[in-house]
Amino acid sequence: MTIKFLAEFIGTFLLIFLGTGAIIISESQNDLISNFEICLIFAVTIFAMIYFFGKISGAHLNPAVSLSFYFAKKISKIEFFTFLIAQILGGILASFFLYNLYSNNENLGGTAPKYGILLAFILEFILSFVLMFTIVLISKYFKSNLLIAFLISFVIFLEAYFFGSISGASMNPIRSLAPALISGKLDYIWIYIIAPSLGMVSVIFITNKIKKLK
Image (cartoon, rainbow, N blue to C red; front, side, top):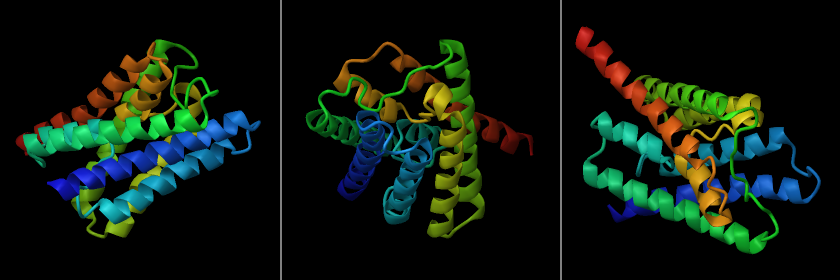
């Protein structure tokens, strides 16, 4: 269990540190890093983490993914809480380091609605649903860790690139919670905890219903 904890901790730390770090650098240096490049950094980081840690912990790096796999009975309750603690600690530590490096940045790469709370909530739900559906489908039909890593990271890239300017395209509670906690910007954090969790867990309930109908 220790090796799984470390895999989720390190993977989540690097995801938040590199992904939100790219946003912070871009904001502090007049858009030095473009939106395309920021989305690519997130995607490449996820690709690498799935490739390296996929065989160890599944490389969830996302509490909503872990919750979904728990409801799907793919991981035990102990594994779920182990992953959850690792992800929270890894994400918060990454944002803490970024705060010490860029203390003048107000949001630390956090997410917030651009065009209203309702739109952001619906969009985060849909994006998370699509991502989890992709994960379930790919995990079922593909065995190559390299291909799985590529396909999941590609979907994340597309969602972030096309919809990031609307809601932040978080799809991951800890990706939003970590910078929000350290920066103190907690006004909209409930959106990014509830919507992705509901979106991803919905996939599991729907697929379970389909299996029962068969």
